Amino acid sequence: MTNVIKTTKGLDIPIDGAAQKMIERTVISDIVALVPDYYHGIIPKVLVRAGDRVKAGTPVFHDKIHENLNIVSPVSGKVLAVNRGEKRKLINITIERDVVNEYENFGHPSLESLSGEEIKSALLKAGIWPYIKQRPYDVIANPNKTPKSIFISSFDTAPLAPDYNFILKGQFADFQTGIDALAKLTPGKVHLGVKANVPSNEFLKVKNVEITEYEGPHPIGNVGIQINHVDPINKGEVVWTVNVQDMLYIGRFFNKGIIDLKKIIALTGPEVIEPKYYTTLPGTAVAPFINGNVHKGIPLRYILGNVISGIKVDINDFIDPYASQIFVIDEGTEIHEFLGWAMPRLNKFSATKLFFTPLLQKKFFKKIFGDIKFSYDARILGGRRAIIMSNEYDRVLPMDILPEYLFKAMITGNIDKMEALGGYEIAPEDVALCEFVCTSKLPLQLIVREALDMMKKELE
Image (tube, rainbow, N blue to C red; front, side, top):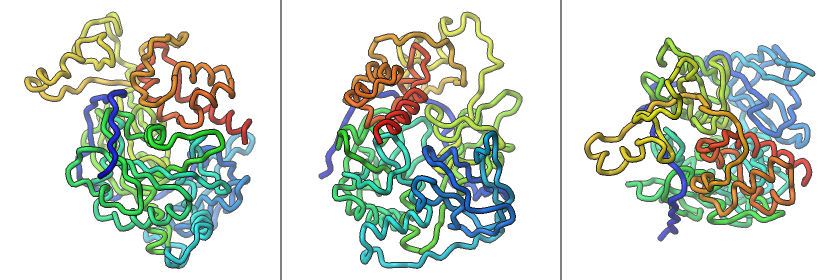
């Protein structure tokens, strides 16, 4: 019988625009781009030039610090340009893809016969290593360190998040192979977080893992929350994390001997006309998903990832290799309201009792009106001010830390207090809800990201 962890801390945000459980089509743009900024912490060294031919799996750039850590092309084709900005910073590398993909052949060794070091070397060479993250610091895993455990969350509780049970249908053999490979990279356990009370949950059948079921509102699906409850990180310890879909890359690599980075991404949000799932590749342009499928006439915000922790992009940008979702929402720049947030209303979601909306979400009213969706836009609705010590962060962060004190330590750059207050376990996505409910309108995810980068620089 699996262990079940329940929490009431957190907040589910009801938003219209969930993707229908059907895969519309495959969308891969003619021009694919690799963007170094998406691989946080890497210092890129370019390995190709304009005019070079590459295959799917050919190294395009690597990390200057860990030179065996490759970033590879997801497609075969011709390198169009190596685009640089100020001070020769690498902006992106664009590739004109072939109609039919040609793959680098990495061989097909038996996974059972490989040691942990051989698996690690293969993943580094094949360019799959960047999909393995580490805590502390929420960066690409240091290949020279051994994790005490590895965590995978099989579900996402963020607004309109994709359903991984649907996405992985028919692909659990590759997922199991990925699990078996990771199990050789740690002396500890591979932990798989599973959503409780899901009928016919295929993830409960996965072997060679420690399964824990979780029940509660967002952010219980975040791997950082699960680490905090199951195997907290102390000074000097390292834990690795891998996204569910990225596990398929590892499994396909050892099952087929090629780099197959196909993934399924959900187009979601209240401004999408037909929210659906699409098969695609990292680096595909955002525009083909959006064109003709969003409401026009208002300024829109495009987000790679979920609406509270994703990356704001332009329609001409390219898909983040870690994103499983594109979210489209109204910018709100053309909305003018009498009395602003102080106006009583029934159409605005409230995390507190400021409006009457929490009452409408009670079971009694749901039976009468059904599930009520509220209007949203990207406005902040306020200005930055000092932190108000009101426990509003603690109500939505189910971690055994003191968030207000941790944020203050991060703002002031006090590394000793950051270490003592939980800085090793936290990541920007874990505080996205804190930022959402923040009365002080502080950019908490940016504060955490900059503090973690400072900790890594000073402590490693």
